[in-house]
Length: 145
View (cartoon, rainbow, N blue to C red):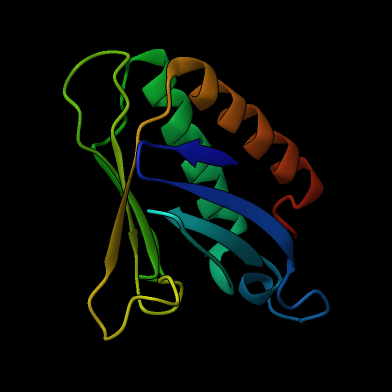
């Protein structure tokens, strides 16, 4: 899933389940995620188990709601505070998403415990492409029983 803006970009890719063979239902559904962050000619990749299968589904529903013009919520946060998304636009078909990256996944040039905020502004076509890409990733890594 790729979201871009005038000063940067965020690519989110699910790599694998964190605990494929765990006997615990919750553990079997944690995902290892790669976040490729680009900001003002700097780039880095962070890999961490920051989302569950259910949270990826929530992200997909949230992005679909933005695309449809019926936003579910202006902010989407997850169990792990490493990642969250906010829609800071109040106009239809204007997507200004503020991505919050916590210490576990903040860019390598960011130091300290303060979160890093990245603004991405995909157009409608890019948002729809990101939704389609996330749908494909979810098919590869569905909720496990």
